[in-house]
Every structure is written in structure tokens, then in C-alpha cells.
Image (cartoon, rainbow over all chains, first blue to last red):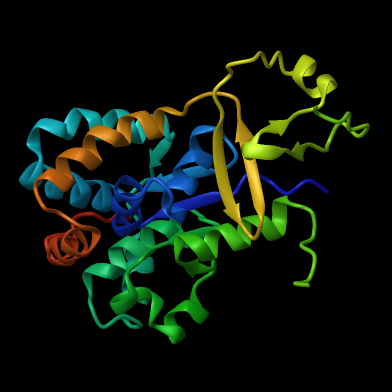
Length: 156
Length: 96
């Protein structure tokens, strides 16, 4: 059976990693989005974070950011349900993160891509409780390969 | 001289990094000499070839150049984003 197109949720850290490195895993993920291999998504809160950051750093490049997100076919998902946010807040030390994760849960994401070690990657109990894997861009690519490429040969 | 590869799903890397794609594959995808490819590195030795330059790469260039010129790095932006997250608020939920 052919696997369905994955829905991949991007944290704001992954968005900026994709801009700042042409060879890193995050850029590969954006490329996969542009060629339609995966569906990329962010929440309104993530988009606001990215826009606010760029507005402070490079206000003249906001239009380029919009075109770039459009090129990668990044969709903005609906706001999360309050009940989902409340449930996740119990597992997080930093309350605003619940809003971001809850948006991915409400959107039925297949994978959450982040570089945030402090709040997400280092929180093993949280990761175990989520309905999708949460990992770095490299983790996502390994997950993607396992589904969409022939089985890898063991190292020689 | 390039050797012919019988299987359409195979290609051979030759001297100086030249990759010869089978003729059947070139014909099927209308690949002409001079076609530019984007290589998507999936890791684990898996590569995806896309026969065009992607917009995400072209559009990221001015963003990367401008951020670099301002002395920004991934570390500085991640620290900034960490502070930004505290500005999200409860109205960003949906009870529908």
C-alpha cells in the first residue's frame, strides 16, 4: 500500500533553520514541500512569531518571506481547541508551547519538526504522550526515508 | 566514454562527478543537456533529483544574505523566537 502524503508541522525554529542553511535538513523538508512530496503546515501563532521576528530584523523582506512560504506550499492550520491546549499545558513547563503543540494535534499532523531542545526535544514524557513523532529535521528525514524509500542496506 | 546502463532506474557516477542518466529516463522526462537539477538530500544515502531550480532556494537567498549581513545566526534567531513565544496568547484557540 502506498503511504499517504504526510502532514508535517513546522515549529518556528525549523522555519528559520530552513532559511539559514541551504544544505541542512530543514531546507530539504521545505524542498519536499515545494515538490508536493509532503504537506507542510504551521499555526497562526507560529506564523505570527516568524513574521514578528522578521519584522524586527528585516522588515523589507516580509514580502519575500510570504512568497517563500507560498513556494513551499505551507498551509496555516486552524486555531487549536481550548481543551487540547489545556491538556498539553499539564505536560509543559512553558505554557505558550501548549498553543503550538495543540495546533499540530488539532490538525492531525503526522510529524512535528523543531530544533527546540529546551522545551520540546528534551521533554521525553511529552514526546511519549503526543499522537505524532516530534523531532529534528534530521529525525523527520529518517522517518520519511523509512516510509518512502527502499529499505536501507545495513552498514558495511 | 560513458557505459550504457541497462536498467532505467540506475545511473552511474563517472569521472569529475558526471552522472549519466539512462536515455529512456531522459526521454521520458524530456531532460535535455543543460537541464538544472535540484538535489534533495534525504539522508541515509538517499537523494531525490528534481529537474528544475526550486523557488524555495531562490527565495531563501535574499533572506539568508540579509540576515547574515545583519550578523544574525540560527542561535540568535532561536533565542529571539524563544522570547516571542511568550507573546502568544489564549485568544489563539478555537472552541468551535
